[in-house]
Image 1 (tube, rainbow, N blue to C red):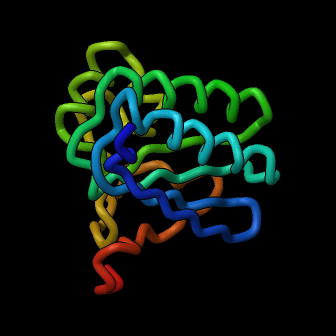
Image 2 (cartoon, rainbow, N blue to C red):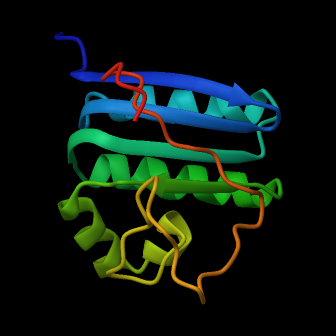
Image 3 (spheres, rainbow, N blue to C red):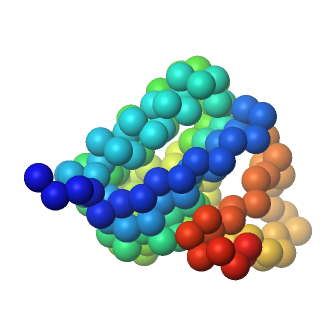
Length: 141
């Protein structure tokens, strides 16, 4: 069986975790995503930010993992947010009605990129913010 074409990195800060993924999320790699997110909850992390900047593909098995993890996180009083998902995943999230839950933004609207100036009427995040950093590019942006 070939290895999943997905890499996952985790960076913790207090009760927050930044999970950075790169590659494809599909039937073969979805278990790695599930285990990574479940481990955060087992470690007492209450806010999980998932940076999908370098994810090139995510099918319904990945969507199921994210929805399940969001339910589990909410059940323990935490949050799970997806940041910079591929456009196809945003479309699927809009179609199934999970955009607000997983993206923290109205359907069809991507969350802001790091460095973007929020609109004056933008709500303040409940748990502060974590700067999303690509651990794969090495350029610190």
